[in-house]
Amino acid sequence: MYTLKKISEITGADFYGENNLIRNYSTDSRNIISYEETLFVALKSGRNNGHNYIEELIERGQKSFLIQKGEFNFEKYLSKKVSFLISVNPLETLQKLAAYHRSQFTIPVLGVTGSNGKTIV
View 1 (cartoon, rainbow, N blue to C red):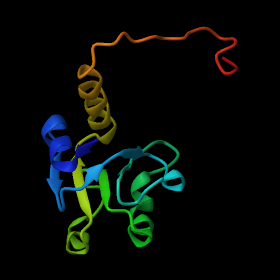
View 2: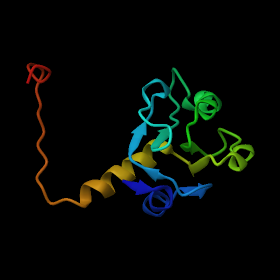
View 3: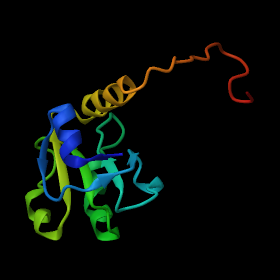
View 4: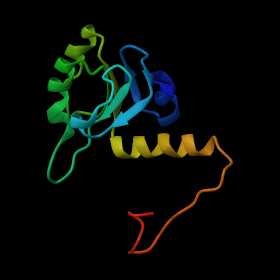
């Protein structure tokens, strides 16, 4: 659980809007658990662009977004209590946050590798 301001401090992303508490993260607009507590990470790929779903998500009540700089005109939504983290590369920003979160624990990491059997285990 991090606030948007804390995520901004950890990752160096620019922060605009309300300091919402984030409990969940999503890169898929169809699988959001809670519009109030989820950070939607808008990723661009060769096949899709997460920024195309932001307006629809705002209409459905989504409050927090991590977007790529220059990809979306976020300023008109700040008055609607929608918050934005702006980054040059949202995927790298998400990776920085994950690395920071992992560094808070001293438990060992276990990796399961191989080409057979992982799904059923």
